[in-house]
Image 1 (spheres, rainbow, N blue to C red):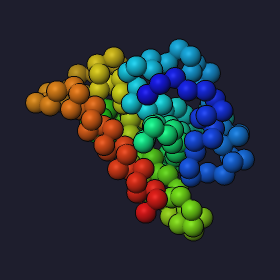
Image 2 (tube, rainbow, N blue to C red; image 1 turned 45 degrees about the vertical axis):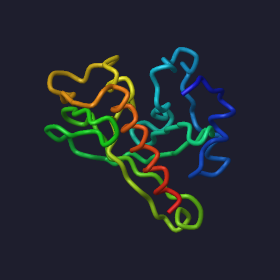
Image 3 (cartoon, rainbow, N blue to C red; image 1 turned 30 degrees about the vertical axis):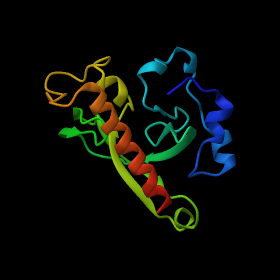
Length: 163
C-alpha cells in the first residue's frame, strides 16, 4: 500500500455516508506510517473510543475504505486474528462488524471479522511488532505467501460487503 492523502481516504469509504466520512478522525501520523510494510491502513477513531475502527486498502488499483463497529467483548484467555493469524491475550483481538453496502446496509445487514484490536496485522505478520510469546505460529508458508493470504482474506471480506 502506498502513502495516501486525507482526501483520498475520506472518499474511499464504501459503507458510510459522505457526511460520516467527512467527520472521521484520520490518523495524525499518516506521513510516519511504515507504508512499505502495510497491507492495509487501519486505525481506531479517537473521537469514538472503543467503538469505531477504520480500514483502507487497495483493490484493483482503487482505494477502498470500510468503517467497522467494534463489539464490546469480555476479555478472553487468547484469541486469534482472522487476517494475520496472530494470537493475543485478553482483548487483543476484537470482533469488528461492517455495515453492508447499499440497500442491505440500510436494512442493517452487516458482516463481521475478528481482527487485531490495534489493526497492526501487517506489522505482526512481518515481525515488526511483537504480540508476545507464542503469538505467531511457525508456518511452512513463506512471508510472501502469508502476506498473500492476509490480503486474500481481507479482499474476500470486502466482497461480502457487496453481497
